[in-house]
Length: 148
Image (cartoon, rainbow, N blue to C red; front, side, top):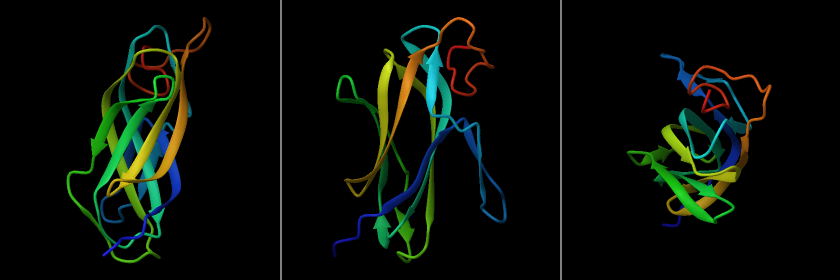
């Protein structure tokens, strides 16, 4: 049986995601679009990627790739440990990938790509930039600044 390819309703990068017990509601903390680094290579100690999808039905293996767009190369990959069952295409489903120690070799454009059973169904571009003087630095590993 050919399963429908899901559609991405939201794909956000943040510091971390809190899941409330009982309701399973998600709170995204520290949503950001770009990362500033004091020097390269740099390591972003902790980040999460939140994905909300619809139009899926059946059993899926979800994988998240991190692609260096300048090099056109996959530099990281994370996979859900188990198959995910989606009962109906009308039911929205949420995925959270918690990433640790993500290394960026150079400034430039990067992209997260989400796959279901090997088929891409969403992507999120972001930039990793050289932080200039006067850019506020946050606590280590928090926010969009990995080297603070």
